[in-house]
Structure formats: structure tokens, C-alpha cells
Length: 484
Ligand code: URP
Ligand code: ZN
Ligand code: ZN
Ligand code: ZN
Image (cartoon, rainbow, N blue to C red; front, side, top):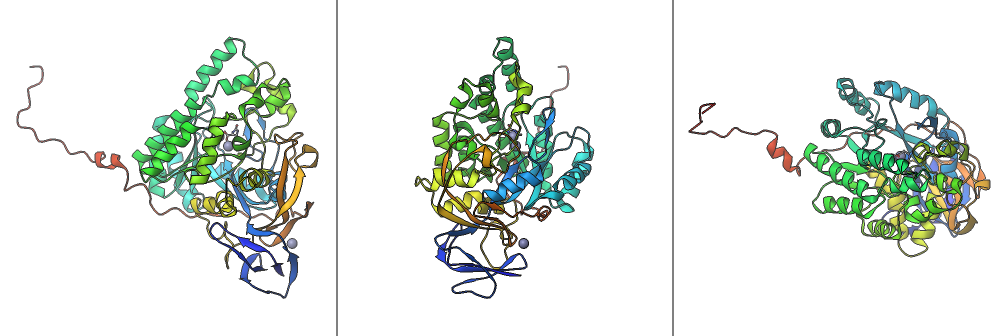
């Protein structure tokens, strides 16, 4: 089957030009003027861009005594409706569980995906088995990213010795370690203190996770990655302190990437002080929303290139699930949605306002992460031979975001009532028209797993620590006798 996208303007991370795009067998086979000979999709007045890639989602994730409510079917349907054509989920082994068994569980869940997907592997415990299995995960399963939680003490958190060991292993395997950077020990202390003082509401969640805990953990992870000779991807960067650490590392030549979320860019901490408990609890996530100073820092990072990727950390819980935490904020399941809204919200608040160019928009929503995750130009590109994961974007199309009209399975939307301008006319998943002007034509099970190769070694040459790993004893002339 041949499809031609006609009369649009192609926008990639580095070019803007008028051309038609031909698709055959799910890949782009020709780009140029006046193409014909297939089903035509009219892109007049639209931008033809690489589909969005959301590298940070949690679909049907077991967490805090429940499961996140969007599964691979509803989650990828929501993604496509908003112009995202690929998601990367976190495979999360339970304590002592084999990494390979955990992947099998994620394989089973993801068979219903409507668009392509990949996994990151979380290192939730450490031992010889994990060390050994990491090699199979990279070489046989095509997963080249390992996530570490420095928060969630007593659950997912790893300690610094484990972090250092795992980062070294990543470096040896050509994998990229990732971190959720918040100091879990300090968060646990602050949470206990707040509860003891009678602060039980959702606003206490924000007090328990000030920007310092994120700044500290980000700095620590960067330093440990440097000692291990590994690159580092910092997920959900939400504050200036963390951004500052990432900026500094990049200035020093380190491969460190920061990932702000669309929620942190557009929503602030005042949400937690809403009189309505449900309103505040629905917005409980880690790190929490922050103030304008931090938001400005994140936007500046996207503009200057010190922050590389905009994600969602889509981890959607219903109001009923959020109410597990009535009377104790630490039991409110952490997470918010955003998969369907990331692209229109970033376009509206980024491109429409003049903060980002269209090309920068493509870079931070698709191309940069395709490169970081080693799947460019199969993904993240409009180029002959690339997968036809394509977004035909209508910059004039508007809507008011509303839970009543969303694809996500939950009963609210953190962006409720926001007006967005810029929406998909067509979203194509490997050539399949999955969305046409708001009409959902997704195909359950159409999505395929994307394998990713290991990286070329980076950072190893920069690490100062390397000079210390093979110490030579000093030859001394006079050694005093012991006990003298
Ligand atoms: O609050 C959040 N972010 N929930 C999802 C799990 C995580 O920390 O990414
Ligand atoms: Zn996290
Ligand atoms: Zn997450
Ligand atoms: Zn089809």
C-alpha cells in the first residue's frame, strides 16, 4: 500500500521545506515535489514532522499498592491522539526478580500497543545475578538504558554503592544509565516530620521534596557517572539546582542529558494549595510542581540546549486511587498524565509564544531522544528509509483540553480547561493512519518493540577518576617499623 502526504511543509530538527512524502510498507520511500500514485493525505497548511517520542511513560505499572490506570492500549491511543508515535516504558523488576522475567511480563503487557514502543530497564535491586543479566538485556534484548531511583526509600531506591557498581557496568556494556534524582533519605525524613506535625494533605508532598533534594541527587549522580566513565540521562528535571548541575556537566564536556516534563513547564506549585483535596492530590507527582523561577530555568534550558528532551512521565491514577492517601499524603500514588497533551501544550506554550522554533520543537519532542536512545534515523527523522511515524500538524486547529474528550482511562486531566492551538490532522504509525482530525483509527497490536543497540563509548576519556583506578604504590626509602 502506498500513501502520499501532499502539499505540506516538512519540518525536521534542522530543516523546513516544502515537499510531498511517499510511504510504502510502513517506511518513507521518497521525499520531493509533486509525488503521486497512492492514497493521498492532504497536508495543505500543515507541517509534516517526525512523530513525537515520549521516552518516559509508566503504563500499567505496579506502584504504591496499585497499578497505573492507562495500559499499553489506552496509553498508546492517547499518545497517537496527541501526535506521539512512540513511547518508552520502564520495565520494573520486583526485589530479587530476574531482569529477564520482568521483561517477559512487560512483553506480555505490551502486545496491545497501538504504536511502536521500547523499554528502559530499572535497576531496583543489586547483586551478581543483576550484574550478569544486564549483558543479556543489552545484547539480546536491545535495551541500552538502565534507570535508577535515588528516591522511594524502602521500595525502588538504590544506594550509592549499588549506583556506582551499576553505572560501571553500564559503561562497560555501552549502555546509558538514567536517574530519578531526589535524595530518598532526606525525603523520608521530611515526610515523617511533616506527618508528625499534622501536615497530612497533598500540599505536604511538595514540602517533603524541595528543589534541594533534587539538586543534591542530580549532582551526586553526575559525579558518580563521571567516576564510572558513563554518560547519564536525568529524568524529570524540574528545578534550577538540577538544571545547573546538568549545565555545568555539559560545559565540562560530559554526556549528561536533562529531561523536563511538560507538566513542570506549564503547571506550578499553586496547584497543591487548591482548596479541593482531589484537585491537589491528582497533581501529586515526584518531583512536585515548582514555582515560576524554576519554570523559567527549564524553558531557558530548552532554548539554549542545556536541556534536551520534553517528556511526560505519564503515570495516570484515577481519583479513586489518589484517595488512598486521604489522611496521609505519603500514600497518594505519585504520578500524573500528559501523553495526549504534551505536543499541543508544548507547541502552544513553546512555539506559539516564540520561545522555541518549530525545528527546536521537533528536536526536543522527537529527534534528540531518538539519537540519545540509539534509534535514529529509524525514529525521529523524515528521511528516506525511516519508519513512517509521521505527524501532519495543523497549527490552526484549536481545542480546550477536557477529561471528557480524552483517550486516557482516568477521570480527570491536569490540564483541564487549557486552550491549545496546534493539533494533529493526521498521526501515522509506521504508515497506518491512526488519527484523522480527532477521529481515532488506531489498531490494537499494531505497535512493535524497537530494539536499540549499545552506544559507542563516551565519557570514559573525560573521567578524572580513571587516573586513580590503577594506583601505583610510592617507592619509599625509609619505612618506620610498626609500633615504634
Ligand atoms: O511521580 C511520579 N513521577 N511517578 C512515576 C514514577 C516516577 O518516579 O517516575
Ligand atoms: Zn521518577
Ligand atoms: Zn517516571
Ligand atoms: Zn492501516
